[in-house]
Image 1 (spheres, rainbow, N blue to C red):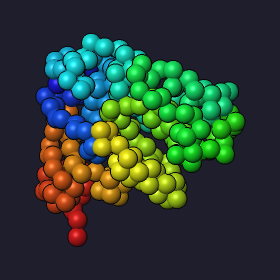
Image 2: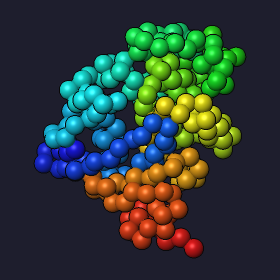
Image 3: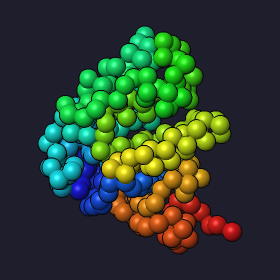
Image 4: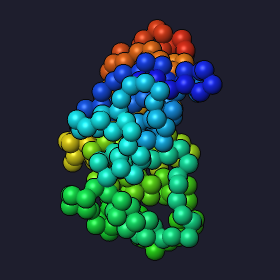
Length: 230
């Protein structure tokens, strides 16, 4: 697919598949086109060319809320929360936006799963940064997604919070073999810990794609992003 702004191709002929049960990491330098690609996939932007296909359906022209009901959920670099609503109220509202069919996970179970069960009555505005990240993940999971897009989920987290996030994703991967996860992340320890496949963007194009060990040693990836490794 392609997406340009004032003639500059932010996403330039990018084509890849996200398979059920797989965790794929999307990495690259600042300005590589990662967030633009997420915005196209989730419906915030419409591509200039190409298609977005979700579970066999062409959703290219669908707005974000329609894609959410069809099973596409995402988080953002800056959590988009209502400060005055409690943690539980956020999750209850997210459940109403989810798929029309499905078991609609209970708020208490979701909050317990992400480690926020004891903070269900706390306004979102009073949460620490790490807890806001976890709440946004709970909101995405409340949609019962088939595909989950995570935009810089580990940004600003403490080492303990990063480990908690890793455990959550490992648990999701073990419990949901039908869930596809696309992870945009600058923390390479997180990327190489979680991803089974890594896609590297550079200047809007796919520079390399493959398993983490191959990406770590790829000379072009080292040159433009990772730097030389000992």
